[in-house]
Image 1: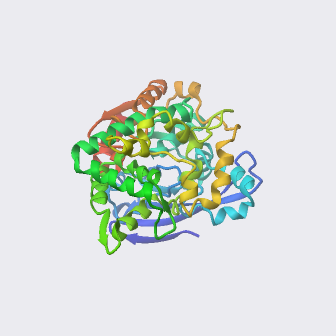
Image 2: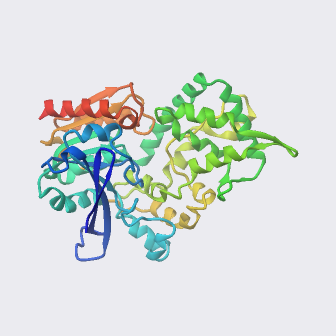
Image 3: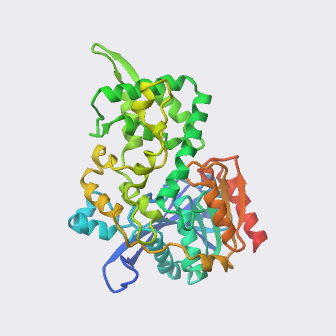
Length: 433
């Protein structure tokens, strides 16, 4: 049964679907997918083409917006939009420390989670497309990891696509996780350097906080153990449009004077635990490196190993000298499963996934080279999360793909400049078609 309801300017309909856990065994176990259909109120009864939105991540459910903000408002001018909670996220049979207990021990949990990568997500999309569109191909907008999924879509089932629109999500077709992080750490350092150039007072503030964490055992109210490394990981926000400002305001409120001396303020700790906890999206931490897994080479905690090649990111060494503390970016480390109470029960599961050597290929270079689907991609100059050089190399291998390379936006350009970004890309797609 579907349920429709209204928000300002839109009609929403909850849609639920049943799909196989393993699409190679369609008669086996099933899971439920949830998606929210959105249509402009004045177009609710029109026969409109469909636009499927694939969220970034991995591990995040679709946006829970109100009305028709940003890119969604632009899309609703001509499309009926489907906001899909990708498997394991939101209402789509969520995978968390609580629900994964249904899979038994760590080995069973790890085997289960191998079915939550881009290839399974694409096959989910194809399984529900016939019911949603009546079999017609749809336009798909993929943001960040959603763009990775869309590149897999072009490899596995291009017949399902009318147009492919990628924002900040053109992956390397063949890079191992080691290659991804080896390219990432220098980009992150550039973002941190730019932050300190904008807010030079934050150099001493960050050093002071890190020094406190190196000499004190700090446990946040939610049970998260805040270490210097965990504090450094707050740099993940520096790849977003307003991230440098958010980090600055966080740092300026760090300490408060008490009868026992200066300590980290409750306000600071409250904000930090919200930024660091994976309670709402543990799947991101569990399968993040596996999105780069293809073939027999394990990911083997790649970010942790590659970080050792960049000693400037070592907090203790930075504080021992007069170097600024370097924040880190989008990377998952084994210590996170020790610090975060939402991840602690899943540490062995994560270890098993990191050691896995049977990852299936996610992309088909030959099929991409023969592509006939109109494809457009926004590539953000010096994107902190997705390497620009990797993206452009992939763009050259996908037949007919048109890129829009811009430094006007950061990785979240679809959020900060949504209508303009989507309008530009849809115009490019029409030119290509």
